[in-house]
Amino acid sequence: MSLEIPKETESQNTENQEWQGQKWEYLAASVFPNRIHIDSPNLLAKEYNEKVGKKKTSVADDLNILGSDGWEVITWVDDPRRGLLTDSTFLLILKRPVPSSE
Image (cartoon, rainbow, N blue to C red; front, side):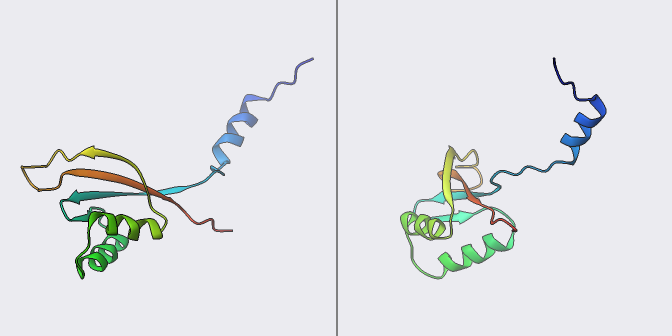
């Protein structure tokens, strides 16, 4: 004996459901010889760039600042703009968990 779910009910259930797993936010950052610059045009990027721009830091220091805020590097790619528009060597993609709203 098999139980069949009517097609109408099946599609209604999946349309109304929201993902319940971990949600992430992502950030792109350009890596320069002595610093990291956040490329995203949002308030977080502005605050971060001002924070590290006020003092002499290294790439490792910048990564530690990002890490202390929950950011994790998930991949990197060569910066296709290198030599043309920027002296950035590569781009980092970072992620961190979005706090649950519960």
